[in-house]
Image 1 (tube, one colour):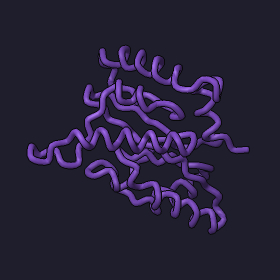
Image 2 (image 1 turned 180 degrees about the vertical axis):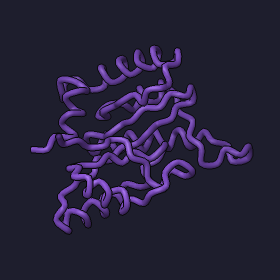
Image 3 (image 1 turned 90 degrees about the vertical axis):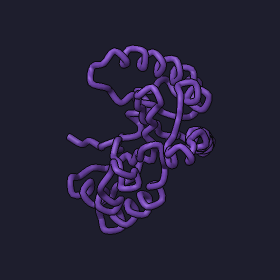
Image 4 (image 1 turned 45 degrees about the vertical axis):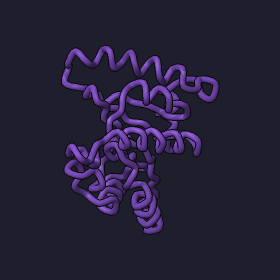
Length: 174
């Protein structure tokens, strides 16, 4: 069975990830993964190094591609993963991250924090594939699932029949 991990955090997620992109992609190649999803926390800081690492590993004969994305930790405690489908979606994702980071007040010890709400995600969701990071069976999961369904169902249904189909496409190994 072939599978790919879609939620990997690099050391660019301060105090969250410990491994470099080179280490992550080398390990994924040893495990036989055809792809690896790099989703740093409220950041896309590891994307360039991830692309370089995937290219270097592929040049060594272990074909692997990077699926770039981001983990968004919202102010209500919900986390979701997003993967842009095209250049315009990347633009919306970076604007979303800029918006969240602009709300941080360094004078109050919030430097580097990102404050995002569901409404922000909804405003920037077009062209993004989204997945909810499940909680520990807390009561917040049901409302979060409703938000996800509303946001990503209406984001751009004309381009693709559904989120599951798009997520499956990301990891296909044709």
